[in-house]
Image 1 (cartoon, rainbow, N blue to C red):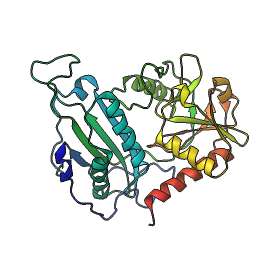
Image 2: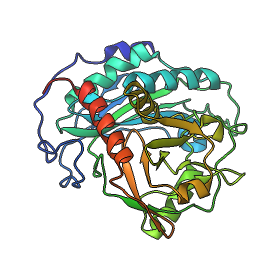
Image 3: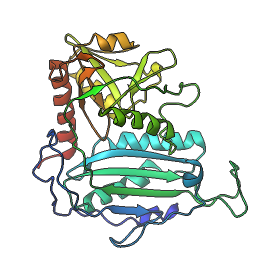
Image 4: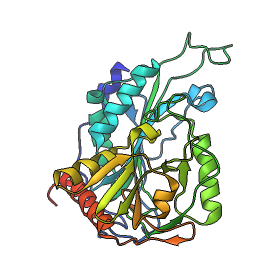
Length: 322
């Protein structure tokens, strides 16, 4: 992984593409995709027409033995990048997966974002443990090839701030934190994909994930906040929810502004009795909730509006002056 330093110098390319004139807070669905992806694989950037190939014997393909970080890019700015890289590096250390330092990956990511010619994009950083040696099978860790790093920036066909959605609990439950630390973003997402299938079959934009005790943990791929009067409440990390970067940013900004916010256990009945609710994630910063099961909520509740304003402020700060 020493050759990571071969990343090209940063280039500020002119912005183009269908989303150029759209504000980050727009609910408008982006126009058809047109910008080619920017891909860094192993130790270099690929040419636009060069295929990106990974071995069939790579452990990410065979076992899901990989880590990742994903986030949205605004005008070349990957919001919360430092926090994402710190978590990637920490998780790799916990799993014994050789990982370039955050300081080594960051210039690669920023070069990729600068080369991407559309205003908004989706950034995915993936680190695989590498290829299995010949004649190997199973989970053994001896004789592996070098880890494989990829950084991809591509267009994203969904808005950052979508229209409100209905939600309901999904059937499957969250894995307890004692079984798998929720901060690990592992390549095996089969459980969450199964949950997402149920959500899409209902025609909803998100679903509620409960713990084994029936308490609310999170959305399928997001963190949850609910509003009661002037108070925003989010499940505590002890619930097993992921310590999401956007969750963290929102909590910091709300507290800095003196807005009331609590982290605590959330029962399904709490959500059913809420005045409003929203989901947050790095790819979809804010998704308001219009209905929980049969009960209507206020997607324009003042707490939801306050959260939206705080997140737009965070995005604008990372983008810098236009």
